Length: 253
Image (cartoon, rainbow, N blue to C red; front, side, top):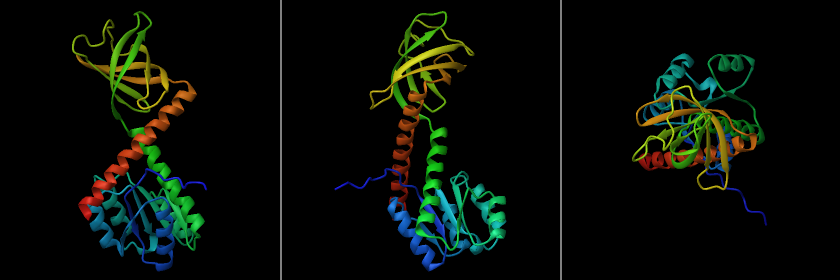
């Protein structure tokens, strides 16, 4: 028998909807992706939750918002929810146009089947993971080999890693043993991804430097290695989001 795959991603979700049938279908779909939403019966209740809690995804029935402009303004002004993914439940072309104009990222058309809702919500969660991955900087301690065009191979400590670059930090003695770097200089890095057998060979540029640290922006990574880095960062983001949501649930319990 095939084992059901369990996702590690648990995003905190707000659902503003009072349609019992639609609410039941949506809850069932969310349960399949291991998401338990907070449900608000009206914009005032939703705004109160937005003020006090962080949500990765906010799903709203467009016709149940008393004042669309005020509601969206409150969401975007909320520090913890400014970058959330907004999913609008719409009924007709007018709703659709208003929702898109207001900045909705995804739309669910009523009446909608469970399959349609699932496709939309999975896309919303994938978009959130992709966005977080691009912004995410994972703390690490990775020993890397460093080479410049004019200097021999040396060692450096990578202390944070993202999709677009890395932070290097001073060791106990020299900044990078045997290498003197300057802003704008091109370097080659070789290092392993923690917890994997994957080695990355990266070409980058030093974009800033202090007496004890520097930042490197990646310029080139072989395609297979780039995909491995993206997958590794996605898993880091999913893990951190799941831990965050667990803390939120403990606080709200």
